[in-house]
Length: 104
Image (cartoon, rainbow, N blue to C red; front, top):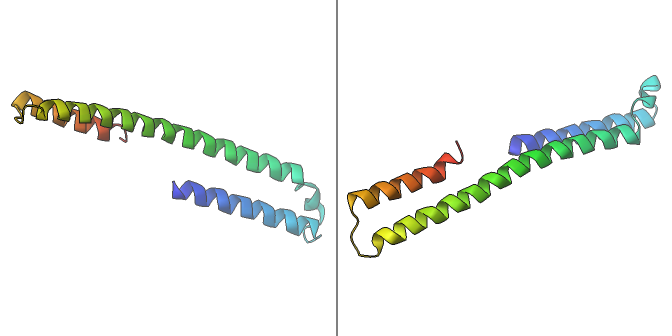
């Protein structure tokens, strides 16, 4: 995620740098290309992309918590009688794998 954030920040800084130099008159005719509206559209687009990425991450985190709850339920059921059978152990392992499967 830090790569996406670095890309976003560097893109915004680049856009601001170009806009500032255009308004300072250093770019001549290019000044008309870089307006506040263009910068706002660029930043809005990047924010929309980041929102989509964070939405996907949020769904994964929620699913991880759901799977962790199922794992804890399976573990609690197995440990109720202070003995773990092969079937219970297989269920615990399956639920543990399901937690990590969310992130694959």
